[in-house]
Length: 245
Ligand code: ZN
Image (cartoon, rainbow, N blue to C red; front, side, top):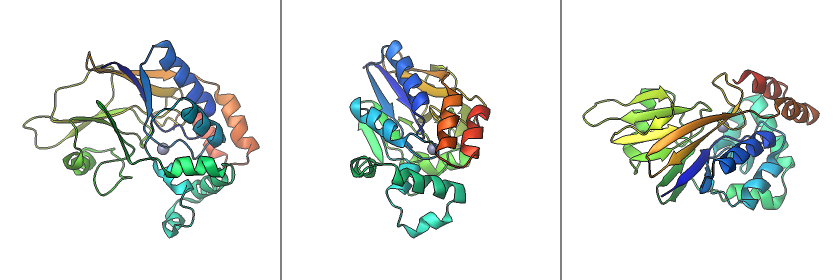
């Protein structure tokens, strides 16, 4: 029982990660959890990995974390050119110990009442749960009533209510977790929000009150953009941060 900070998709954005951790500390969370994609897009992958490890924050494997540790995989050729550039840059800017840490991240974290998966449950781990029919592919494989995912960078809640034939998907609002057969909650993204709100996103899951509270935390976007441009990463990765998309 307690208050747990849950966040996802840091994407090598150290200023956003620090702002979120500070916020969750101020709210006196008992522990924090990360739903994957620590790296990719941003210019501070090593610092973000080191900070999560220092604080011993459990984390699941995200698709970008996976790509960075499997550069020889032929399937990477199918990724967008700018994403490939970021993966290669990230690999070159991590040491062996940091790469090993990424490579050993589990696909699922299950600690007491906290169940995490980056993309989706079932045979398609990187399925984007952006539509009800995609929830319908993940829910039958979800072994827990309540789980948390990331991957889409948009705060959302998916539900399959008792007696309903199809799941529903909604924007996440703070409040009690609805009564349903299956629930999956996405806290949005720390380091690259895509819901047109550029502030870092995170949530607090209160297991006693059975509530989630969604927070948006401002951070130094200008500085983060400068780091991306100094690293000569694709400029769109800097531009999109101030647009929140
Ligand atoms: Zn992501």
